[in-house]
Length: 153
Image (tube, rainbow, N blue to C red; front, side, top):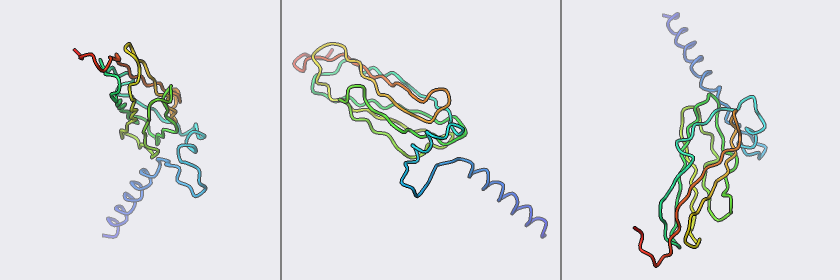
């Protein structure tokens, strides 16, 4: 009976030890976990984007466009987005600063108020992550701006 209890305790210890190998960079120094992750290249991970280009077709002047880019951490370390901003400063970009653990998904959303005259619009979002192949990623959304008085076909 004591052997069974011993084996259960050893199995539980191994299971807990394996789970704790994902570094989420918690600290009491006031350093953001994403900042700490960017300095630790030995623990970089990999990312898989669902889409890096979204086309919204025709959008009237004055309307808002929200582009949501989904990604997955397909590595074995915690993934952090340390920065994300639009190319022109004309879009608000929302993203989580929390760790994206291996196998989990997250998203980055850019909301853009179309104030452009009629014609093609091409905007990008620059994203910085703690990923091996490259740390800078470019996400693109585009549409055809239409005068608000014109009917969209």
